[in-house]
Image (cartoon, rainbow, N blue to C red; front, side, top):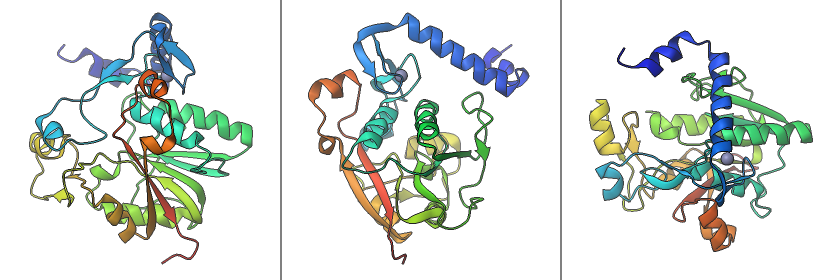
Length: 280
Ligand SMILES: [Zn+2]
C-alpha cells in the first residue's frame, strides 16, 4: 500500500480519528516535556519544539512572512505553531482589546487555539462558532460547521470578534470574502485576518492563468494558494470597508526570553481589521 496513512484516514470514522489525534499529541507531549521551550497555549514546557513549514525558493526570494521552514515552530503537546502562539499573546494583550468578546466566529480554527478559546468562552458564557469549508482529515472535530466564506450563514452584525487566518490566500475572490467577513461583524468589532505576505512586494501578485499545483507552489509559496500578498494587503482590506491596524511583535512588548522560549517569529505582523461604527 503506497499511502497507509491516507488509507487509514479513509476507513477510520472522523470522530474517532480526531480522538486518536488527541491521544497522539498527549503521549508525544509527555515524551518531550522539558524546560527549553514553553507553550503558553497548553501551558507546558518542552525540551524541543519541532521544525515546521516548507522550504521553497519563492519563500526565501520574497522573504515571505507566515510561511517557510521555521526551526522551533511546532509544540509537541498541542501542535500549535509559532503563529498560533503569537495570536494567543495578541488575544491576551490588554491594549489590543480583542477579548473579552461575547460572540466569536473562528474560520478554519487552529485546533490548539480553538481549544483555549472554547474554554475561555464557556467560562465567560460567550458564544463560539467554528466554521470551515472542508473537513480535512482529523484536523477538525465535528463541532466545526461547514460553511462558505463567500456566503456565511449568519445575519449582518452578528459577531464581536472574528478570526480567520491563512484562508484568504486560497480564495480567488478574496475581496468578496473580506466583504462577507465585514458584513457579519458588529460595528466597532475587530477581526484578526492573517495571511502569508511578502515585505518585498509592493503590489499583491495574482495571475489567474496559474492553476497547476506545482506552479502555484513555485509562484505563490503553496500548491493551493492563488496569490502572494504584498505590502498592499491592508489596502485590500480597506477596500472591503475595514480600518486596519498592523501590530508588530515588538509592539507587544515581550521580553527576549519569551520570544525565544515561545519560539516566535519576530518578523510577524498581526493584521487587525476593524469594522467602523458608521459603515461605509
Ligand atoms: Zn502547546
